[in-house]
Length: 427
Ligand code: NAD
Image (tube, rainbow, N blue to C red; front, top):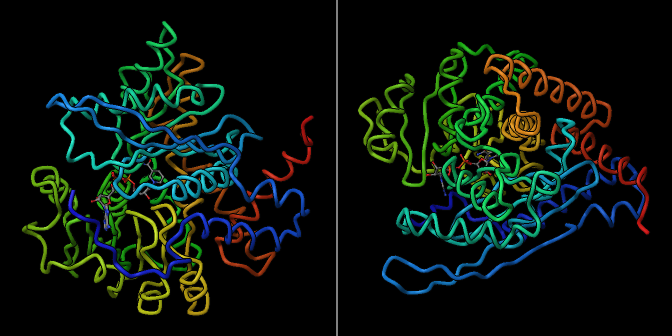
């Protein structure tokens, strides 16, 4: 993997995702008038596990990897959240992502708390065998936390169905029997769900259409730029293209492409699959940087890569009318304020990308029941949950004269706070 290309330099405070997550929470807690004790409980993560573990590499040498599993909250059910492999993974990043998972599960009213995991590594530098050994040892190290009743991982940046299959197999081997419900995002052959690989992007498409309907934006007139062309970005772009939106720009870690007339998504997917990057696509008019993409004259901007892409350094130059956060944490609180002042509507991550965890929940339910559903049923249940979450978020945003992010936070934090208050403090 090439060195990450940061698109706008955030300030030190902006660049720590856990500081961002806690600032967002504090703002929602103030709007809700949350009790001081509950505030203290919910603004910190409950458990954080750091593991340093050895892996024998192909050349026979031992290498030590560092990984994390963090559980922010377990009050409404088992913790849920993905596992990320990336050179810049840090404990604070994983803590932020775990907290956002709690709110995401509560926005959609799934009976889960929030968790996240990560390993500091560049998977593109590992052989398939090394990747498998690292994954299996990491799964074993965090097995003291994970399991169908306690904490259920899923894919995130640089992890996929195969990695979920190795985690499921490792936990099953340690138990002595198959435990499919221990992770979601697995291959269909071992208890995965129809619709899961596309679920996050499908959910982003549903909320984008919903936002357009409410803002009076005609999809046929709308242009879209998508930053990140991985699982979430590529599916989002493809589904919006199918729905009649004009996707004019996409990018990945190597850079972006732009064609104001629109990109042919099926052809672009073929190109990206073959070349491992979007640049070099014959249907592009212009090669652009990730920074350029964020400032293009488009109707809708969809960050679908990493955190801290929209900051106080570039938010004032964003021309989109609507920003839909497919990635987790792509916008800093400073950029949020700039968008709010400029009338740019932002659909927040904890709502916009909740489609993935929603179908992960369906997968877990199907595994526990050993009874599997058809894709049509999964997609229609997903749409209903996303539309309801949007409606409830919007209603609270209006009631509190606040942004959609604060509407979603109020919905989520209140649900978790009510559950915490009902259960009381043990012992
Ligand atoms: P992925 O690994 O499949 O894809 C990541 C994409 O981002 C790749 O195209 C990569 O080239 C690109 N990228 C990486 N660094 C970049 C940079 N600095 N600038 C521009 N592009 C860059 O990951 P994914 O699963 O698609 O996840 C993307 C985002 O969506 C993350 O924020 C993740 O937490 C979030 N998310 C993922 C899921 C899921 O189900 N996979 C669910 C909810 C949220």
